[in-house]
Length: 318
Ligand code: ZN
Image 1 (cartoon, rainbow, N blue to C red):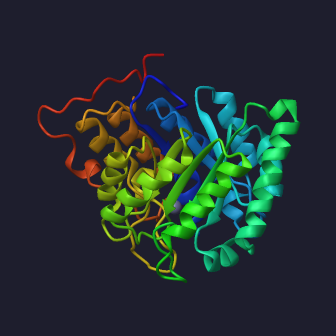
Image 2: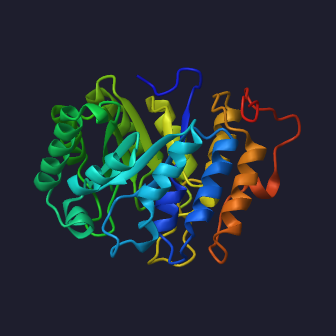
């Protein structure tokens, strides 16, 4: 069941997590809250506001519980948080997150490097998380998403076997995932590959919502979005200003640029209910609180083409 029935495509802003964890610049808690508020005002309905990982690993994410609480207080935003393990999930649920984005890398060497776990160990954590949610009444509303990072290629292993990716997807279904996603974490994927793998992934998901997370590292971000749309995906992650570049490749572009993504979807006739002008205002708030961080994107430079109008937006009505 889609989270919202009145829009065609759900755009999930992940900048406050993916964008901020990739930079050494520390955004203040107040800055994050101002940015999230501006996103909400633009009509962004789902935001990944932080990551529940050990403080010493990612000091940028140390205030994630506070950010989850502050965003919940704003109302009107579905609050997602990234969790790599059971402990993180416990903390995210206690803070009040609506969705837990559990992440495991489809490339096992990447998973070992990233979260120090084999696939089997990560899946055991996932199972415990589902059990915790199912056993505690106060968490019954929490959605658990099974995410597969590096599904289209890996900086350590190179190619990632699609059979491995799809068998991990089957494990998520077996263990009780509510929804699932695949990520091109390092920008290796191409549209042909994306269309083929997502077509099979959607079959395995068997009616569960499926989301896609693309990086524009090699310029194929929006082409991959289009390919995933063709396969039937209706939820996409993006980062305002294309934050999330690779710390090991200075100058490399990051995630798909949210405002360019919204422009593409709206110009194709998909209703997102995100107001592009207000989204640019949110981008300005983000830049103000993240000075020195390179940002990307083309819509911000060129503006809308003559005669362009959005499908329909309700942002700012209230
Ligand atoms: Zn990412």
